[in-house]
Amino acid sequence: MGRAENDDPPVVLLVEDEPLVRMTAADELEEAGFHVLEAANADVALAVLEARSDEVQVLFTDVHMPGSMDGMALAEQVHGRWPHVRLLISSGYARPKADEIPDDGRFVPKPYRAATIASQIHELVRMAEG
Image (cartoon, rainbow, N blue to C red; front, side, top):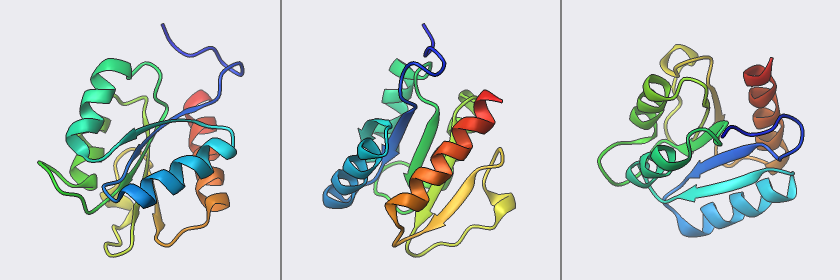
């Protein structure tokens, strides 16, 4: 069952390996009106998507993470398997070019402001719905 338009908050899958950064970002996104699912790495994120891909509208991932793949490889996988999920990528180190992010995904450098992330996610959700 898909999400009911305009009734439920947009669902964001947040993928961040640093627990404090993940907790802070999740709190800020929830305060901005999103429902947040959390994952510590790409493997956990893929498991969440396997179970709940019909709910997730935006993947918000860090680039550098331990595990089987980084955030860019995760974005490629998500785009290939769940093309309805929009992509927002962040990093304090890497600066991918726009054409390196699949499906009109966005990049926001760290450190970022919560308002910037919320604005980007709202825009991505509008793109997905429109």
